[in-house]
Amino acid sequence: MRSYHQYCAIAKTLDVIGDRWNLLIVRELLLQGPSRYTDLHQGLPGIATNLLAERLRDLESDGIIAREEAPPPIATTLFRLTPRGLELEPIIYELGRWGAPLMNEPDEHDVRRDHWLALPVRLFVNDRTPDEPPATIELRAGAEPMTLETREGKVHTRRGAAENPDLILTGKPELVVGVLTGELGLSTARARGLRTQGNTKVLGRLQPKAGGAHPTAGESISRSRPHKRRGNSADN
Amino acid sequence: MRSYHQYCAIAKTLDVIGDRWNLLIVRELLLQGPSRYTDLHQGLPGIATNLLAERLRDLESDGIIAREEAPPPIATTLFRLTPRGLELEPIIYELGRWGAPLMNEPDEHDVRRDHWLALPVRLFVNDRTPDEPPATIELRAGAEPMTLETREGKVHTRRGAAENPDLILTGKPELVVGVLTGELGLSTARARGLRTQGNTKVLGRLQPKAGGAHPTAGESISRSRPHKRRGNSADN
DNA sequence: CAGCATCCGCTTTGATACTG
DNA sequence: CAGTATCAAAGCGGATGCTG
Image (cartoon, rainbow over all chains, first blue to last red; front, side, top):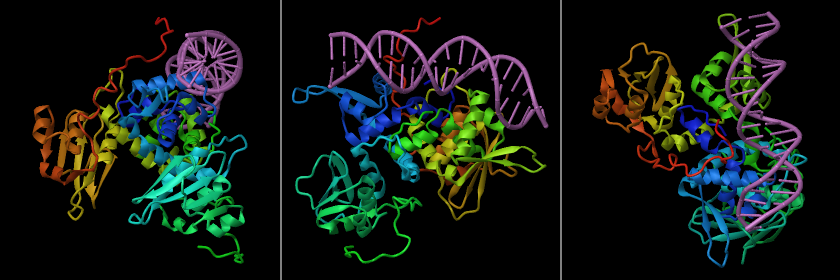
């Protein structure tokens, strides 16, 4: 991208990260941690491989990412965020917050990736009981499971299955996310197909952050149903 | 801009505001308030006029801005942010915070605009004495003066001269900003050419926000460019 | 003058193919 | 696995022209 040549902090920032794909690469590294080229390519559907290579070079020369030759057990190049790159986290989160209301219409051609589920969780969920022992929830919303852990007041996410989860949530992504962010009642989610194994009470430890998930008018994600239909098993 | 077609809040946000110039248009409307087409064009040096027109159309159809036919005293079209557009403010501010360390090298071709001075003030300065009566400082760092007002714990900025300023700061932009954000001591700034008229004690009411501007934070990361673009251009 | 639209040369993007 | 090479199409910046 050509520089804007404006002596203004916004313009200078956009000179560095305003290029197409750049912030999505940062998103991948934030959600996935240090990644191989191929994993980045998988997590960025639609990017041309030459563009990915060029962007990685640019981001490296601007001090946002660093490449690291991993020793034999891995034996490949890893791309990771530098400390300076990690400071982009607030920007990513503000972008995500602003974009939350746009998430009601999964467009026809929209691509999904399971690990993107971690984003709404990071944006909108806290651990409201920091003093209790950690709790683990396994999320099965796609091909690859995700693990959510509440620990010392914070909520962490990572790829892969949990070892000894307190709870397993299985179902469509919007149902799993809805339950985690509190947009969706558990009974409602169950009525729409969510399945649970284990102790659902750990969900009570999750606290939606302030200014969190907006009440959308969309039907797929809404807190309350038009009229009450309350015959279900009360589990909340 | 083509959509990323990714069902992810970050990507959806970038689908809307990721296009070149879009966020700078929002910056202008945040700093300047409702603006005429020509004023926007002035505040966005480098933009092609057809692109500005196109972007304004896009932003309007996405609900970020609205156009308003002003009645006879003004008799022109004004562009203003919608409430939804105003919600982009946190994003702009995070971009500005991240970019602050890049502001040490005013590049050779960099263009300046006086009203951009308001950005660092909004980012890094608070009124530390909310109970005292408002204080007014006039900033003369370029062709057009700016006015800064501390009132009820907040700092406001606007274009134009003040009526009865408690203090007038005159000098190079970096000196004025440095004094306001606390990066620069008053005596140091004076030694470098800053001039003051009035009661300099009102500067004591300005409190740098947490995580504020740090003078030497940028290091030389942004300066060194080992390799940039592909070298296939024969530089003619 | 304010608010665009048109044309033109150049750069960037995206898709595909290919390589160490 | 981790990229390069190639190329058509789209986007961008600059100049200019048009309309109230």
